[in-house]
Each structure stands twice: as structure tokens, then as C-alpha cells.
Length: 272
Image: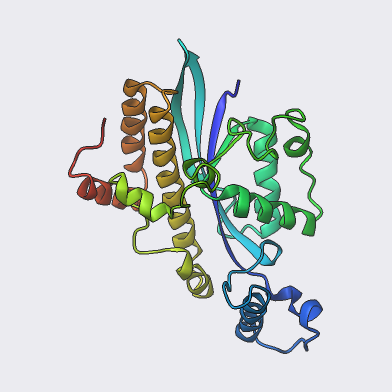
């Protein structure tokens, strides 16, 4: 049984350093031109359907997470919120961020919770770890041949809410913002993923990290509602988790704004 819960999210920008290898271009081509080349390439390989970069071409610039301890009582799980923060510092390079992430998993041995983590976050982190020569031994060796971080249906090891809530594609895969709207949660406030590159270009890494942390909080709140629905956490523990979160939101300005937006969309009704 897991003793900790790690809800996490990453933010990325296009890694244009591979354009020379992929397109056989000169070194003096601008970053903007290289990004355009990557966009056009991905449109071509998807028949014009999608310009979103494939996983190896993403450079990780932020990893944010929420950590809870897990205890057990009478068949229920009990979560206690420990911290909400981003890995590394504003000056941490990608290698430090990715290495720190896999080391943290080896240390805490947590259950992972993501929104689209199996399709995006985890594959990106694996590719980028290999780019930098980073080992992730625990991540790959933990568990057994039936249950592990790498088994798609091992929900107790890695709960990808996008997959679970859609029954692995049997129903529509919903956007996080849509689910947040249905559950009276704030969703994305002011910033969304499409603005990350421009924020990065403007040197606003702190805003990116703040945005990533609010995405993590939204993910956690969706997860709590899902666990309550399944009868895996009791109603009083759900409400206790919300209370702990509201208190922790007072510690950071961007989370205070998140709380204020949440109070507006839920009409002040935070609890079940």
C-alpha cells in the first residue's frame, strides 16, 4: 500500500536544438524560424490535423507537484496534504529538474496522479531523461509484471484522470477545463498552455511555475472527487482535504487568487 500521493504536472517549450539534425538546416536560423519548422513538420506528419509537438521535442521548464501522505482506516484511504511547490529553482536547468523528479519518486515511492500524464508528461520525462543520460531505476523496476508505473491499467500506481474518467477512451476524453466547469472548480485562470512559450520568451518563469501549480491543484481536486465517488475516501476526509487545501492556499499569492476564483465559481460551497 502506498504511503504517499504525488500529483504533478509539467510545462514545456519546443526544443529547437534538434532542428539541425531533423531538417539539415544552418546554425544561424532563428529560434522563431526553427519553431515554425517544427510546427509545419508536425502538421505534415499528421496530415494537417495536429501541430502539437511529439514528446521528444519538448524541453521541460517546470515541474510542479502536490504531495500528500496516505493512511488507511476501515477500508478507506485518508489523505493529509504536505506541500504544494515546484521543483528546483527559477535557474534550474532541464537536467536538474528531470533528475530531481525521478529521484523524488525513488525517495517517496508515491502513487502518481496526473491529467494526461501517460500520454504526455511521463513520456516527455522519459525521453528527456535519456537525452541527459539520467537513470530512473526505481521508476522502471518498482512493482511487478502486472502492476507498476509503466502498466497502463495499474491505476493504483499511476492514476491518469484523463484515461480513467473516459474509461480509457470508451467515452469522450474531456479537457481539464471542461471537468472543472462541471465540478465548480476554477480551472485555468488567466494563463493556459498556449501562453507558456511567450511567457518563457519574456523571462516570466515564475508565472509559468505558478500556473503549473494551479493546474496541479485542479488535478488534485478532480482526483478527490473521483476517489469519493468510488467510495475510496469518506466524505469527512474529502472535506478535510478541501479544508487543508484552502488553508495552504493562503500561503502563496497565486494560490490565494485560485481560492478567490474557486469561491466565486462554487458560490462559497467548497464542501460536500
